[in-house]
Image 1: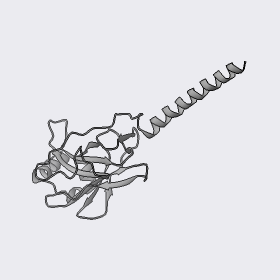
Image 2: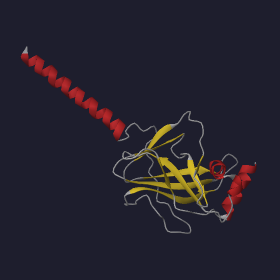
Image 3: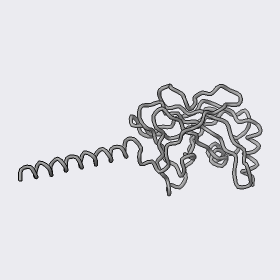
Image 4: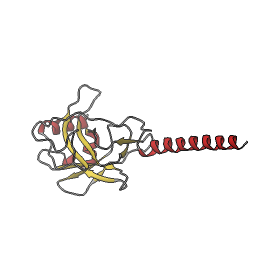
Length: 195
C-alpha cells in the first residue's frame, strides 16, 4: 500500500510540475502568441545608414524609421515602415489588431505626442522576442490623422513611437529618431486622404 501511495505522489508531482512549466512558458516566453513573433528582414535604408537592423546587438528597445511603401493598387494605401528592435533579455509586447499595425504616437516638430486611439475590439497581444526585430507599418490614414493633416508636409520633423510593454516597465512609448517625409510620399499621402 505504501508503494502505491508513493507512486501516486510521484505521478501527481510530475504532472503538477509539467503543468506549471507549460503555463509559465505560455505566459513568460510568449509560446501562446496569436501570430508568431515577427522576424524582420534586414532593412535597406535608401539615403542613410541604418539606425538599427534585424541583427543589432545593442541593449534596450529601439525604434527606427525604415522607409515607405507606395500603394500597389486601388485596394492598398501608402505606408510608413518602422523597425522595432528588442535588445532586452525578455520578450516585449504590444497591442494591435494585426501584428504589423500597432497604433502610432507621433510628434510634429518636437511638439506634444499625439496618439491615435481606435476601437479595442479584436485587439491582440503580439510579442517581439529578445534579440529580434519586427517590421511594423503605419498607414497613411493613421499617420495623417495622428499628426494632423495640415502638418503633413515636406520639411516637417516627425518622430513615431509605439506603446511597448516589457517585464521591467509597463507600457512606455518608444520613439524613432527624427525624420522628414520625402516630397513624393507627402503627395501620395495627401492624394489618398482626399479620395
